[in-house]
Image (cartoon, rainbow over the protein chains, first blue to last red):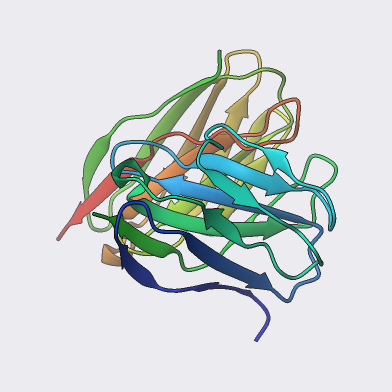
Length: 114
Length: 109
């Protein structure tokens, strides 16, 4: 079934630890995105990639890094987790380009940093 | 700056009609999306408007006025399963979605 998957579903992490959230899509979409969603706030863009081999910073990139080695995968790494990074993380993808840019979302990763 | 304003919460009755408003200020504009998000789940696409006017899709319709920076989502014949958050998201000049905090819609029998 075509779609976008994320792993893990949830994770409890000690502060200071390194963590990589995985995201894979099989829709051959060019663009991919990482968002965080916190209560009372809209989705906030962390990083994005318009095409394989390129990445860009979103609204809240500090403390996070991404890579886009191929079309399908877009991992998000927290080099040294802090409690303020406790959130629900969504990966999304789209065909990108032009004005119609419907994004398809993965199921999310619920991350708790203690 | 960029700003999205929508009501935090609304309540409606099963079978009724509800209108969820959204006003926005963005750097440039390339259309506006509405997404639905059930609690604990990912957002899913509902509608996209790029020209002024009303777009109808079954029980859901979306309206856009670019000159007023205003959109609304109209839900008819409400069902219990429509209880969810509704996210307004205009597309800015860089083709990035700017997300509102969402409107939590509660449907009562």
